[in-house]
Length: 478
Image 1 (cartoon, rainbow, N blue to C red):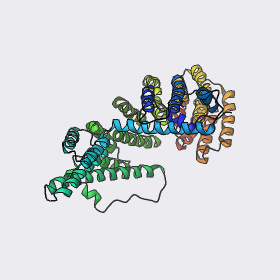
Image 2: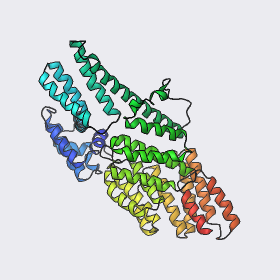
Image 3: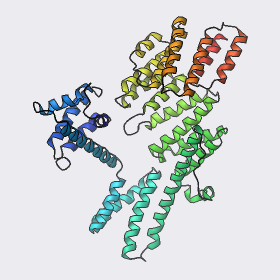
Image 4: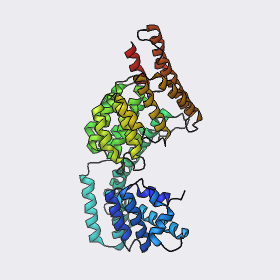
């Protein structure tokens, strides 16, 4: 099989949308940034193919690209690889520049230093007025805001200190100090929350140290105006006292009250922490938390907090759909699948869309459509293979196709045994689920003793994904 032009280049280009690719072309076309016409021609070839079909890699092999560029010249692998490398670096620079344009604070700080070094005081005063207005008017008081504010005031302090040490010394030093401390405390709390969250799912004997008197210090009223301090203090309390469900309700209320003061990234992170808390409660058997988790996702959708760098992570997409289905929000889930599949990375978009649509149809008891869509799912990922087989398992049971079900259980167990990517614990959990499904087919409706024993086994099982379905089947038999 002929090798691709460049995996790094193609992977990078496939992350750009159509509008971004058009801007990237202007970037590559600029003689200031690129003085190699062949690199622009290479981009045009890649652009034309990816614009038509992001998954069409057959036309991006080295031989075909060279033929489009230089036929009938003899193939030169070294030159083609150098051009692909140059184009990759230009695309990386473009992405970084786009990021700077979205967040102009770094650019303002660079302009502040450049104009100061050139001695252009009038120009410098104009930039600093612009920065001051931004600091006074912004409503997003996140860690990046306090870091930016510190850097701005620190530049002013250093400039004045070098010129006349005594002039307004404290007036220039104190704002820098307050901004630095605000940044440190919010960032330290953020890291502490990350450690507590990690400790929930992984065993570790390592801790994240806090300076002596830290908790007493942040009770100072001067930090009351920093939104993230109050939010993170509450999150720490929740993670350390998960049994106190009132704290979870308080967090949701606080996010609603001050959500507009948080950056999208901070708001998203807090919502995911709330989601993890719901998962913890679901694992404890409190299925009502599916509804709460689904409401959190709905709020994130409404606030536009799901999309990061123009894309939606595949795992989050699947998790939202699974949660919505378990909450019984079938209509909302169907709309979400259609609208948000376009935000998935192009390389996995079709597969993720098909799998989740099949899952929806299976919950709607439209089993024929579910099986039809499942045929288009490629088992390129273990997660899809396990999920698709589980959906098919449920369908065979619901349709009373017990011979097909037995055959699938046997082949499923062979797959688990042979696949080296699946951990021993996950193999054990899936095998336990398969044994429970097998047992389920042997229980007669109304057999109270058998149902009671089976129910006890289901409740004791650790594998959570199909647990609700098994409990629903028990209720039907009862």
